[in-house]
Amino acid sequence: MISVEGVTYSYGGDVVALDGVSLEVGDSELLAIVGENGAGKTTLVKHLNGLLKPQKGKVFVGGIDTKETTVARIARKVGLVFQNPDHQLFAETVEKELAFALTNFGASPEEIRSRVEWALAEFSLVKYRDRSPFTLSGGEKKRVSLASVLCYDPEIIVLDEPTTGQDNLQKTRLAGLLTKLNRQGKTVIVVTHDIEFVADFIPRVVVMSRGKIIADGKAEEVLVAKEVMESSSLLPPQLAELSWKLGLKHPSIKLDVVIGEISRMLEASAK
Amino acid sequence: MKVFKAFEFKRGSTVLHQIDPRSKLVYLILFTFLTVYFTNPVALLAIFLSFLPMVYIGKISARWQQSLRGALFFIVFIFVFNFIATVYPSWNFYGAAVSGIAMSLRFLNLISVFSIFFLTTSPEDLTQSMVQLRVPYDYALTFNMAMRFVPTLSREAQYIMDAQRSRGLEMERGNFIARIRNYIPILVPLIISSFRRAELVADAMESRGFGASKKRTSLYVLKMSQTDVLFILIVSTAALALFCLNLLL
Image 1 (cartoon, rainbow over the protein chains, first blue to last red):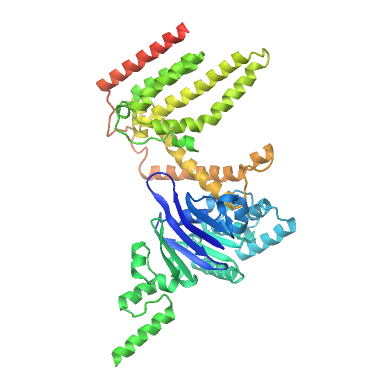
Image 2: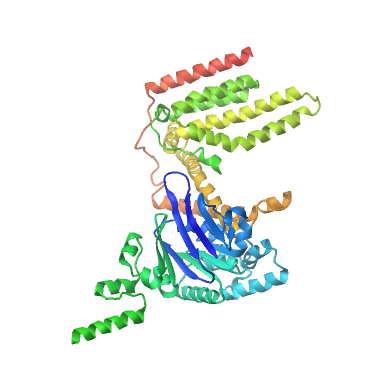
């Protein structure tokens, strides 16, 4: 579905934001892209809907080369939500904010109405529908910005730091929604620093560092690989750290696996 | 947005960077005056050529060219608009072309002289020189901060544009009125975040004790050197020569 082939990108100057990055994302995958500040995550993500075109290499979305089409055409397929909601909220009411993208894509009034209702309910924004988005709190704005993209039902959903400013309840709800959308066949890509969120909910992890992908695989394997976590300046999941400290044979990010390992260890030492 | 970048100061070690901002201010005022005063395109071209050694000495040719490239659209626009406006009653194509060229050159000269000034003058030195020229500190600081936030604003405009294009906004779509309307989703967040930032900056300044004492002292005080005298002498002579040239033409 998405195929990034040897992409290099630099904003000018000495720093190379992306340095020969290749990534394959299949249909209805759920993956996270993690990495230190300035690793190139956002630059990579901006290539997925054509906001940036690769200086070297190619990006294909659904078989189409992003260099040969417009952002608006790809955006219909790839919904990208940025970190900072203040960079996009502009409408008089939350409801109009949610309808913006649908109007741009020429949806019918009935479709707009039903999609907006869905999004308002899904993100618990119903009571704010007539409020100005600027009067909302940080976390609520974040939800409006997520809803404003998810409401047009893109096939591929890319979220840049969706968990910042969300309490645990909202995070869990977001995870639930992402998992549900993923089960319905959507591809979901989450860019984040929130490693516990990844460990709990996301099966595939891509680790970036200094413009390169340094690991790509199952979360259970990547997040317990000590070298990877250290060289990318990420805070490892607590369970991985516990596993390392106890010297478990099979470090894990799953609570039941770690408990199993520990009790096996205790049994062995009792004998 | 690249135009702004061409006015952004970068630290350098050339003579032009070390000269006191007040001397460069003399240069800026003289050459701005000449540019506005002259009407003959040859004289204006002579002013333009006089910038080349400055750009060379200050080692700013790459970014100066960038600023000119950024202004290219306006230059073409000014030429065409001037040509159309002056050609109409008399149908004197030659005269209209000359006046269009003069206007474009004038604009080019203004961009260049301001670009030379701002590319080689650090904002802190500029503020300090304003203070030493008896501009009240509050105003000097306001000016400095306005300059300081131009690149921030242009970066933010880019973020906003990215976010809205990702929601299917096409800036170039529709007729003239529709295109202007297309800017609303860009301008609203930009203005609101600017206000918010202004408040944050004010809070940050107050928490660092801005205005706590009536009399401010400065850690660094700018002093005119012999190089400055020489610089003022050279640019004044050049300005005088250009002025005479204009009289002869």
